Length: 289
Image 1 (cartoon, helix red, strand yellow):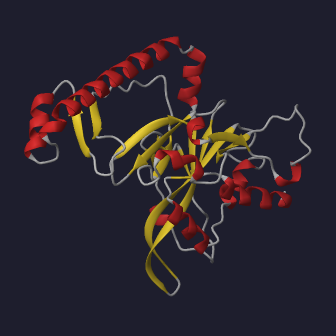
Image 2: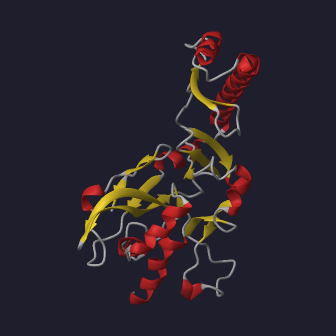
Image 3: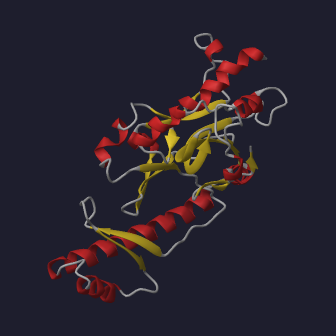
């Protein structure tokens, strides 16, 4: 089984890193992170052996000490393995921390997809009868190019989205960004059952965040967003009703595994920072390594 070591040791580096900016990517090369636990999980007897798995990676910033280096901000990589008979989603959440803005897009719109992982020893010798069991979140173009048309300063981070048809999400509170696509928009929340749009607009004008000339356009924008949200809720309800029981059961049985790097003499101790939390869409992992 020693021949497998270079296969899965390289795997985590090939998976698209989410929730990570361009500058943070360079910091990952500071240490020789080892994911031998991920490698072992795919071997016979491992928790992922023989299963269909979808992988994505992320980084988590922490202040760490290592050797003679004092406390330093370090980006710890983590690999998320989703055990599922089909892709967990074809959507991606694109967000900006500074703006508090978020949008759910089709992966194809940003040139991303789940692609099969082919081990080095098997590349070029697979036939149509061979069914891949490992899929990686991947960008079909060089990182950054796929997001250029989305304004990279606005969309700084991306998160894999997961839709569970057995769970209802009928939030009536909206994040309003107006004017959209502008450098310094008004960012506020609006609850269409509890908030009064006229009062909210007046408050924003009093706070000099809106001008009188923008009043009608702002109200129209909010009303459009409310209608969009209501339509989305109705469509989601119809989709749940149309989703067969077999698919719903598959979503309910979907399992999330989270792998951190193993301890080595070449890397700082991260044991106290391990957390099962993945992101707000996925929640927490069922299994932590």
